[in-house]
Image (tube, rainbow, N blue to C red; front, top):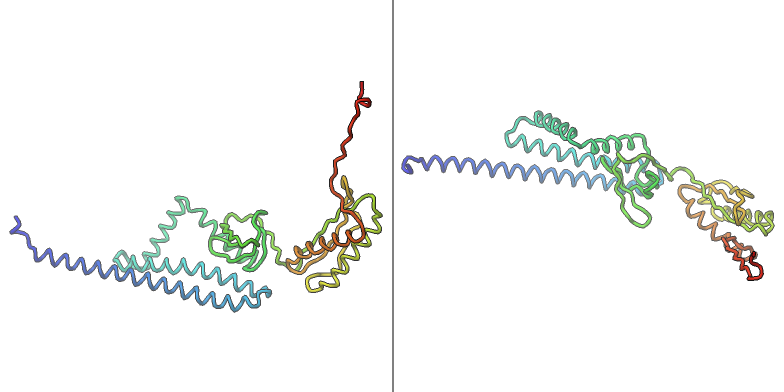
Length: 292
């Protein structure tokens, strides 16, 4: 039987198949390398423009430009690799490039039906966030009343936040329900000050007004308008609460609140005014005083 085998034909066939395999592997490697290079170039140019734009990050248009750049970089990466896969399939002889794209779209629809609805939901939500300008890169936001930080980037599927502690939080866009953006023209600094019932409220009110006005005069760069001091905001169980309202430029309200609290504490100490705190009074009943 071995004598009837055409070894020459088999070797020629193996040689042809091996050649095709090598060519296919080389084609796949070249396409993937070109795709990787295209992604790196996209990242390089968007990062370069982003770095130049960040020098004027306080300009709302600059924030919008940076946000668009991060979105373009995210979409571009997916698009480049999608096209690369279609080219590879076409190069392997499985249909034309157009039919591959249509087939890939069909596979995508199948994937969606099998449970990838959340991915599409994230992409659609990210698109609305981008075009409705809900927030931009560099904005200080609170998402879902849970996550607070500065927006690092807005990608197709996720929003990236960085907290003041340096933590990086990744939130799928489809899970974002409520957004509080603190990067508007102003935020309100609110300082509640507990004062004792025993003190003269009129005197304390004048002291607090003096502190607030002095702070405003010394910090015009971060304050909007003169402060408003409410004489009595509430009657509490152990104190009377007076409140300072000060409009702050940008998100400087946190700094203003801390500074005013410190200034009030120092002034109260100088003037001998105690800040109330909860106290427990214990009455001892003597044996003679116990009811019989």
